Image 1: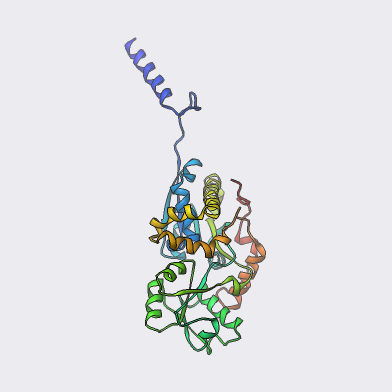
Image 2: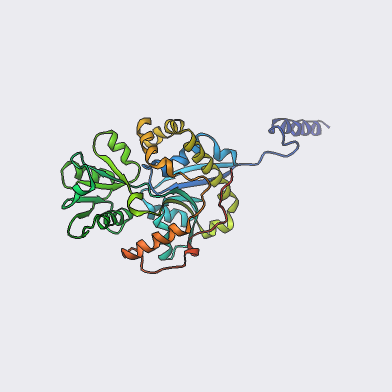
Amino acid sequence: MATTSISRRRFLATLAAAPIGLGPRLARAATAVKIGTAVLGDYSMAGPVIVALERGFFAKEGLAAEFVPFRGGPDLLKAVMGGDILVGITGSTDILVFREAGSPIKMIATHTEGNHFTLNVGTDVHAVADLRGRAIGVTRVGATTWIFARMLAKKEGWDPDKDVQIVGLGGLDAQLAALARGEIAAYVWGDGGAVTELQGKSKVLLRFDAVTGKWISQIQYASEDTIRSQADPVRKSLRALFTALKLMRESPREAALICAQKLGWSPEAVLRAHKISGPLLPVDGRIDVAALAVMQGTLLEYGVIKKKLPLEEHFTREFTPVTI
């Protein structure tokens, strides 16, 4: 009898500890997910993940999320393909390059519309025309930054192999060191160019949508296996991210304070980055197929990809438009 009474008391105590509204049901455990970005030092790429975590938007969707920034698109791809990362956020051309290489991944939403990449120049450069006969730094030959530099030269009517030197240098530190030594006069980067501008190391001359026209800067993607087997966590992750994007669009100063510490930037630098990429933050992630077609044609033109795969193989509309 005593045992029955104790068991009953324990059962009632369990019900009392359950959240209001669950009644006799026990609270469900949050679903653990990892969201990855190709790099950390890009406001429009990493900011939505940081804001969604700090403001509890993932938790409100029943997700226990972890943010994992990587050192580049290929490293992120490996983690997405291995099932460690649920949703990857990267530069948009990765979907075309990786699909051609045989990776079964698909774009699930647009993360940054237009083209938020920037042309960053030394203090003695006042116009694009000043770069003729000089060197422009890019991450590596064949990378998106390399393509943009060549497109810039072509727009100016220059021969990109004779009238300007395009140099693969790697990361931002290498670009800035080369700029300080006078080895390059400019470099191509994302919205992080706002940080170095504030530091007086370079200045943002233009945003590259003035050169490329129709484009998608950054995307969210997942493996085909994840799309099939974990559609619900993917959908919830996107709702959390787009809730964060809404906050970033409507309250940039609040977002800057949230992002500054994680990015290692000052709030003022984050606000400068927001001026560059804030107008390109998407509302619902809809995929512009015409922009994808322009990107595919550009990559084919510059030899980055060799085959024109059907565009429909690169994305799914299962998760867009995202409603919040």
